[in-house]
Structures are given as C-alpha cells and as structure tokens.
Length: 114
Image 1 (cartoon, rainbow, N blue to C red):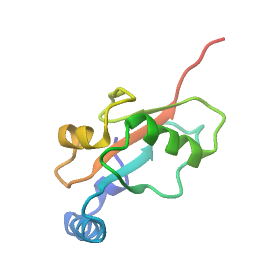
Image 2 (cartoon, rainbow, N blue to C red; image 1 turned 180 degrees about the horizontal axis):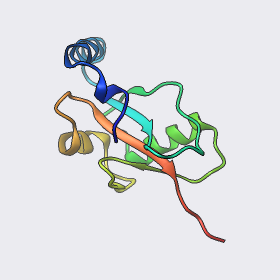
Image 3 (tube, rainbow, N blue to C red; image 1 turned 90 degrees about the horizontal axis):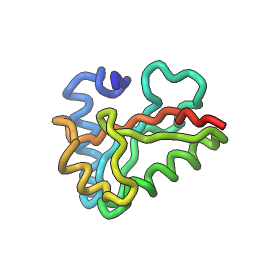
C-alpha cells in the first residue's frame, strides 16, 4: 500500500507520531486507507486512528464499515494479509508495525458471488 502518509517526509511523520503518543501513550496509532486501485469505495474522512491495544481486529473492521457507510462487503488487511477477527490490535502492532511506529491497514471490497 503506497499511501499518502508513507510519502510524507520522515521528520513530519515523527512529529505527528510523537504528538499522538504524547496525548495518548496507551493507544496504538493506525493509518487506515483504501487499497490502491480500488475506486468503487469511498475514502475515509479520517485516516489516522488511536485505538486500544485490546480491541480486536474484527471490531476495528466494524468501525471502518460504519465510517464508510457502504453497503458493500469490506475486507480489511495488514500487509495484504487478512488477520483473524479475534486477534488484538496490540498483537498485530507487535508483529506488523512499520518503522515509523504506525500500523498500516488497507480496505477493499470483497468479491461476493450469488
């Protein structure tokens, strides 16, 4: 996922992450964006999230679905992987956090036949 945020200069990202973690040091910083090449889904108004490490991935997916207000079936991925819905964000952060200290997620529509 080549997001707008990954293209920001490192010093700006560092300032943002330091500010976020100073405000809420017990939260996990996440960037959630529409997957590249997906045009038939709306974009989220807010891309940066601070979430409780105990939140499950399934709960985060539900937040994204609610914010998108889309009738389409949505898949949320991390590094093109669909994690178990029951795994916590804290566990995912330990495994997949970027060197800039953000956890990057992408959403796309799910192909449903029927």
